[in-house]
Amino acid sequence: MRMVRYVNSNNRSSGSGIAAVSPWTGLESEIDRLFNNALSNFGPSRFGHQFPVGVYEDANNTYIRAELPGVNRDEINVEMVDGSLNISAVRKQKTGGVEESFSFSRSISLPEGIHTDHVAATYENGILSVTLPKREEVKPKKISVAVN
Amino acid sequence: MSLFSSLIQSPDRSAERFDDGRPGLSVKPHYEIVDAKDGYALTVYLPGVAKDGLQITVENDELRVVGRPAWKRPEGWTTLYNEAADAPFELAFEHGNAIDVEKIHAELRDGVLRVSLPKAETLRPRKIAVN
Image 1 (cartoon, rainbow over the protein chains, first blue to last red):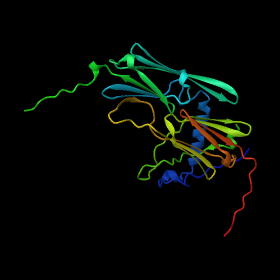
Image 2 (cartoon, rainbow over the protein chains, first blue to last red):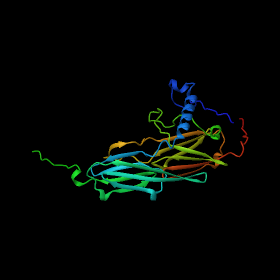
Image 3 (tube, one colour):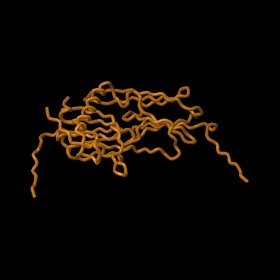
Image 4 (cartoon, helix red, strand yellow):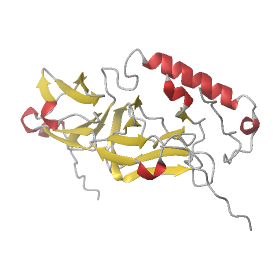
């Protein structure tokens, strides 16, 4: 076995604090690495079966962005069911000639007043973006008041 | 695992910097490495990163991947809830000359970066000119 060599964190770091010269830097990161390795055996840690999502809105729409890298467009399903948006996807990957398949799904409760017939979705750079238009009655209304 | 002896994740030394030079924020992406017969196959999950925002560098026997998400929250959008990190992804390995850096091949598709790192045939002796 080859000796593992650490580069002293001091070499390139711009930090001037005590942390930069800590003799434990290499050890800490090694411990982190061992923990990460050990824990990663329990499944894909970042994604699990729940992928990260973000929910945004503006005056006209509610937007949902879901991180789903590496999935096939044909295997992304977006459904509106009873005021929730259900997203499910399958990622297939080949590891050493063996094809593995991972399924992800998530249900997101939606605010009321979504125009369910006009929901649109796009998939780019591994991000699924869903645009949910608001119904007219929930859009903010601007009332002009004449001030004399 | 043989990876332990050849490819090892570098200690956290983010190359990201704030404008004033302080170490910046970066997130370690989810990744996998498979040790195949003639090379390592590295898969890095970089959701939201386009080719323009991806930087792969090999310097001083360290391989570093930095991916900046292409998307910025548009003006007028309010965040109701967000689990995404919204910071650049950064991952670094020391390869200890175990790979042939000239033959690294990388491909980014749908937010997944696949890098093939061929193992070095031999550790070629290098001649160093002395001035």
